[in-house]
Length: 397
Image 1 (cartoon, rainbow, N blue to C red):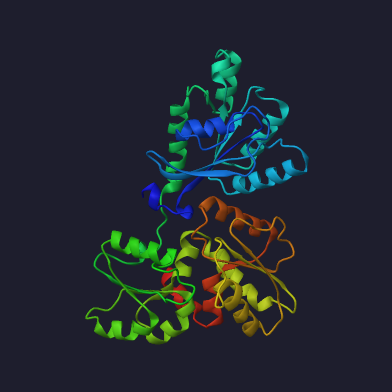
Image 2: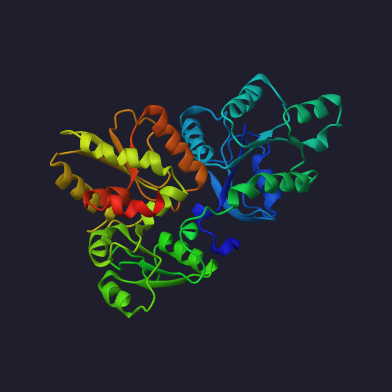
């Protein structure tokens, strides 16, 4: 997929990290071949993380982030480090830049931490133009499987790009969403409501991704609104192999689609493709255990204008209130914001994550698993509250 059309959730995230004055910004500019980061000898020049879309051949589209130094100082420095850590948490690949001071104790400790956490990273030994490749330099490069470069002269940059592409390529392979449920020439009906929350002039991202996958697999996709579904099914001479609906219309669609026709939702498909569907099934069951004033986190992976019928801020809280008959303590977060401490929550309800990359999704799932916090997605909660969860999950199990 071309860089221009790949959205954030489809691009692997590469974060360039290290201490101040290690040459991170110069390295980013050298890799990309553009001056996208400010370069200065003054420590702490990079403040907010700077992201740049880039086509890393032959792996595909990525976003490369320049980050503040991990050794930044002062109150403002702590905030810069926190901002850098958010990027690090959702990075698929880390480039740890070792500066002129080499491998001191702190740097080695940080690299060991990345190894212990099983992070995907490349140690980049910068300033190769300022010293000879002596035995020590070769030894530490081999020890950490790193690469020697000079961000200033460009030495070693092509080798670095090649290694980055090799490590990113497996991550850029798109997961199967629904293609394994159908075969060539099958008719697949996609039910796509067009309410106030629908983006003007286009379908929402999960619907677009499924539509593209059906076309790529030589199926015959038919996109309809819920209001036209009954007429569309009657007009077909061949029975659909699958009907996929937006969760907000799932009850209406389930009443229209005959039981003999497999039915599922975009949310169910994305729970399987990007998340851990079995973990999320367990999360749905936790709704029945909520009590008065139970703390619930509703998390959305993107930021957008809140409407009067917003699914996360309005519809799901109303469904929970009606289903549980309890007053719940609900907190909302969006975008890259995800609480550092989730211990107090009894349930997390997450969006489909179409704008989140896989590293960030895995991190959030690990956090929930380690704290034993149930998690489910929007659509699964809606299907459960509407009494159709068993039916829409059947094609996937």
